[in-house]
Length: 326
Image (tube, rainbow, N blue to C red; front, side, top):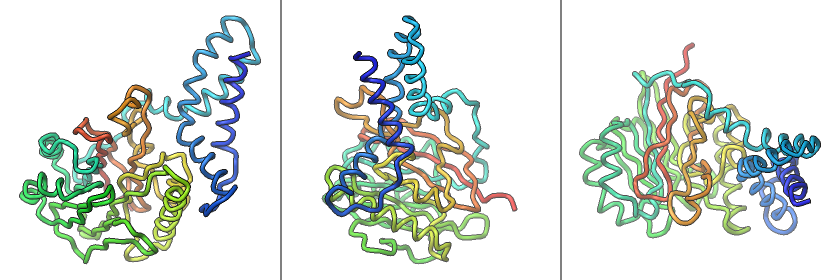
């Protein structure tokens, strides 16, 4: 009975995550609760899948074929896509000549500066993005970063929504601190030259869905980014990268996928690519990838990797992109 109850719950979760229609940005009331429920089902659908492994083994051992079939459906739909990336061959194309970008959420500036600098010295990226850039992070990192990546802009804040961008390449147009729309948190967008043409990179940090109000703001911000991307204007970013506080299977990220952007880890990464959490008791359970890189039309992903622990609750994300062949 317990195995059937677990499997029924798993079937409900994968059904909610994959079949329920997308809700509009919620304001309050039942629509908000329904959207939040679906969002959480999408975020943790992998966990629902792997939870079916003991049920599947029990069902096979006792020859309960209906239970086994049901558990296998949950496992395949919930965990199958991520498990498949864990066993697929290396699909990266090599980073020679590409534009390398590294993104860090440094947990209120509390990550280890020496670990960040060591990673950057090894990777030698062209552009470095920071989320949760605080005055303390500024003091600990800014001067050292500017020696190697001198083209920079910092918007330090005492809360979790400061940002900074550092580039080894000159910025070829005025940067944009906020995208179009009613953003209250910086989402710094810069433009650098790559192969004789502009490459626009938006440093993303959306609100975490820890309350109904913040969840609604997260979705509205994501919808604004997707609308900006869909314009294909002279300011629309080629790359949205940073802490989305959402997995790639959610509607928060799906808005950019719907307008032609590609999720970098799905294109060229291996394994699950989990980035969070690296601290606290939750670090002992399978993590989730909430730090994303979305790459627009006209570009291809050469590499997509997750960096090592630098003392934050997030692991950094590393991508190399290049212009697609004509």
